[in-house]
Every structure is written in structure tokens, then in C-alpha cells.
Image (cartoon, rainbow, N blue to C red; front, top):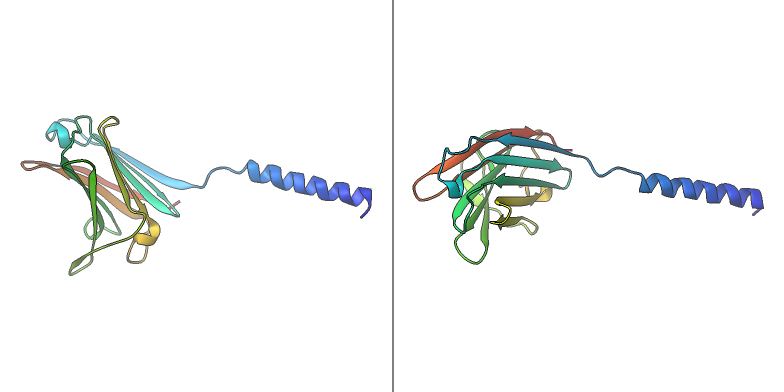
Length: 167
């Protein structure tokens, strides 16, 4: 290999490395809904609902300024407002409990999928779920229709609906 050819190869490799390092982050579409404060008891009063929908996962979170160590939240991911994949997060002790169900036209069934995670942070006043796209037990909806709600023994709060395309 001549010096000139070696120089061209090294320059091409350097350009490739620079282009790779300069690439932006993976694209994800997002949505955010601000819900009215004071329309539910403080421990379940959702004030913000956010969704990030990317090729690999969906991240949904709700902000609850009065969040404490008890209550329940439901996160829905579907093709329409009703039915689809529901992830339930409850707190009544040492950590959040998660369960997931898929409801079709006629019946619901439990969904067990490694990678579905939930967090409950009293410090950040936030409940969050992460759902890998591979866990959705049907054709992926496009756009995704997302909703979040909360409940206690005596009341509930519905944070509204977001339609978010997959990035």
C-alpha cells in the first residue's frame, strides 16, 4: 500500500469516526398534557402526564405533587381510547407493585413481559412506567393512544389522552 493510499484510507476512517460521534440521539416522539390541579385528592392528583414513544420503548410518567406511599395509577397504551395494554402501578408498602393486562374486543388477559418497569418517587412526585415495544401483544398502534389515571378508595383522576407517533 502506498503512502498516498494509506493517507486516503486513514482520512476516510477519521471522517467515518467523526460522523458517527457527531450523530444525534435516537429519535422519539413525545407528548405532554397539563391536567387541572385540585380536581382529586392530593395523593392522586395528576398535574402533568408525559409520553415518550420511540422505536424500542414507551415511557409514560405522571407528576403528582402530593404523592405519598399509597394509591394506584393506570397507564394505557392502545390504538383507540379504550382497550389495549394497561399497566397498573400500586404502592402500599416497601415498593411499587406492577401488573399488566391486555384487553381486546371481548376479554382481558394478563401480560408477563420482562422489561416492563415502574417507579414511584415521592421525592420527585412522579410515577413512571417503561414498556418495551416488544411487550405489546398485538400489532403496534400508529399513532399510539396513551392515557393515565389514578385512584384511591374514594376518588379518581383522569389525566386525559395523548396521541403520539412512534419516533
